[in-house]
Structure formats: structure tokens, C-alpha cells
Length: 398
Image (cartoon, rainbow, N blue to C red):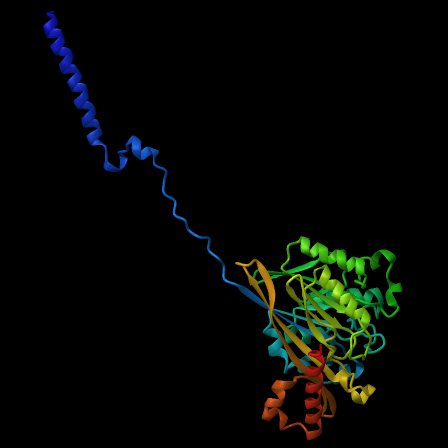
């Protein structure tokens, strides 16, 4: 073939390949087309800030000693149906208790069973209906680590725990078996709850040495420090200690209470709730390492038959509901006590239908209600007003 013709054929073939390539590229969808320049440009990432959660809160309501002496037990007995009903004791304070996210009280008796005679001081044994009333009132947790928890020996301690659990309540301070530290998560705020008592009225001989290591929580500084450390290792937001200590009927905390209270704060406790003296003692806020912590040395008697008529001590009629508002700040990663409210109470004992009746009164609200006061004699009103003054003066005494 002539070289001229071969050259022309090669040119035509080359041009056809070029146009074919262009046509294929033109057929691509716009979104599929890329260029080498576009491929080299990194994608644009918008700088979107992390969403900060809103602060969350929870409330704790704590009270002191709930005791049942024989006059109270007899007063709650209904002969017509042959059973006990203690709910009336709590009717005026129920709304305060059930409104809290966590309500806690010291249950200073045992429910060993009806095969053991019911009795008050010195070796308590109360009907299980006392727990029905406490459940009705709105309590969530009962501390059972106190000097009366072994009044009916090991059987009384265990039966009390069983009765508490059967009613959907929880107890701390006495145990059937070894347990880890109780941690409650409420509104995403993790609380560690600890409980200890100074002693057992000499009844700890009813437990073996091994049982003493886990069934009861006795005040031991090394153990308390270690428990607080364990709680901190669990990453809790706050540590609450309910402690049975001090001297009965003394309106000022002992040096031992104050010293131990300071130590527990330094170890990492944030809220310390005291019981046992049966009278109200002072409260204080202690700032440690830039954080406010709270101690109330004694919240007094929430319910008992101890009073001026039975033991010549008017202060044993006084009690206190302590309401604490806890807030978790996610931005600052801090959990703090935002508010402390004191709600003074007084145990009213009066005759109804020929029997004693016991009622826990929220004093300030009660004094403002004329319909309630209309059924109370002037002398009793004066006692209630005196109780309010005594309690508020003492609890705020620094």
C-alpha cells in the first residue's frame, strides 16, 4: 500500500479515538465527574461544639430516730380486727417524705416476729405493721445500724431485714450476707450510702466473730476511711454517711462527734446525718478543698414516746426533717449541695377515743393552719411554738 494512504489511515484512526474518549466523558452524569484538582481538596468539616447537658437535680429528705415504745404499740392496736395500724402517725408529714427523690430514716427497733412478745425499751420488738406505715409515709431507705439492732439477737436482725425487703424497702447498716457499698443512681447522680453505729448495747455476743465482720457496721475509723475510698473509686458523685453516735439527751455534740465528723469530710464524705442523742443538735457546712460539705450531728426523735411527761425532757419531743437539694453540673463536672432546708417537727401525743394517739407535726405549716389549731388547747400550742424556737435556734448554732 502507498505510504501516503497508510499515513492518512493512521491519522483518521487517531482522531476517532480522541473523539470517542470525549464522547464517553460527556456521557457521564455531572455528579460522577471529578477532576484531579477536586480530588486533592480535603472535605470541609464543620466545627460543631459538643452538646452540653442541662444540670440535673435530686433531693434527699432525712429524719432521725423512729422508735416504738409500748404505749405507741398499744395505741395502734385495733381490737375490732386484731391488728395494728401506725399510719396515722405520719399523716401530716407524708407529703414531705414522698415528694423527695430519696427519703431515709433511722429505724431504731426490730421486727423479730410475733412469737416474741412486743416490747419497747430496753429490748425493742415491734409489729411488722410499723414498716407498713413507714412504707405508706414514703420512705425509701431505713438505716438499721443502731444500738438496738441486736435487741432480739441474730434472729431479730435477720427478720427485720426480711420484713423490710418484703415491703419493697431497702436497709443499710445491717446485712444478711457480705455486700458491696450501696450506690443509688437518681437522676444521673450517683450516691454512695454508708451507715455505722457506736455499739449494740452489749448484744453483739449473739453473733459469731465472722458474722460481726459483715452483719453489723460498727464505727471503726479505719473501716470508714476504707469504705469512703472504695466509694470514691466507684466514681460516685457524693458520699452520704448516716451515723449513730454521741451522747443521749445532750444538745451539743461531743468532741468525739466533731472530730470524727471532720475526719470523714477529709476522707471524702459529703453529707453526714447523725442520730442517737434523741434531741436535735447543731448542723454546719464545712468547706474542704473548695467544696461545701454538710454535717448535722443529730436530727432528734422523729417518732417516739420520749417526752417531758415520760422522762422530764421536753427536747426529746423535737425532731427535724432535713431536705437537701443536690445538683450535678455537667459543664463544670461538679456535683454540689445547692440548698439545705430544715423542717422542724414535734411529736404530738393526745387522747382520742380513750387511747393515746401519736402524730408527727410539721410545726411551721401546722401553726399556720387555723383549722388544725382550732382543735388544740392553748397550752399545747405554746409547747409547739417553744419546740419550733428551740429547734431552729439549735440547728443553726455555729
